[in-house]
Length: 262
Image (cartoon, rainbow, N blue to C red; front, side, top):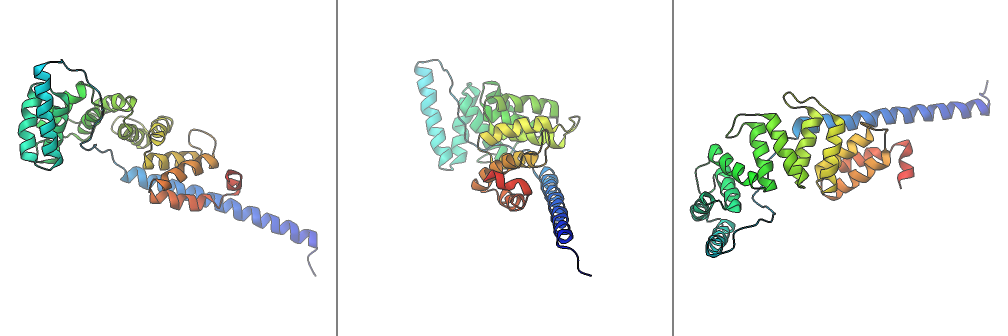
């Protein structure tokens, strides 16, 4: 006996809804899989040799002499004449020149023109950080987090990351997000705080933070699920070259509510 048309129609709708339900479950599972793998693989990291900040110095012959020597040291550093730049920077650093302190720290950190020495590197990072260089504050935090040249102390790391993050350092904002998302030491996972710091880093253009923020939105962590917000941040992340964002977007586009985001 043939099935009445009305019955066939209802059966079709039920099948479609069931299929979409499975698809949404698959999407949530896939994104959570992305998150778990990222939180396991993404690490706190140090920043490179560039810095941006303004400082006040005593105007006079001593200042002009220091600036001339620092310019010479910076040229040597940029030309990869690290042994010479280290000699010039060491004198300047001892005399309190904060940019020289930071740059000298990077040389000891990476072993450029000098023997790699985490203790000496931390000493100069700390000097520059205390003077207000946010990238040095970030690297001091990394040293405390990883125990490089100093006893590991995640609480001190967070203190220094927050100083740098509040000064606009996106690396520190990203790292704070990692700490609160996955937990470190005595710090328990707190996705609300992770969202706060990743959002700051994402606004600042960090591609991985943009992806992570999108994943939190997609899974309704800390808020109701927001497909369009996830799409927006993953598109930014993909545009910044983060391949996982492209993969996540492909899955997101299969969701029932994605059509309203176009």
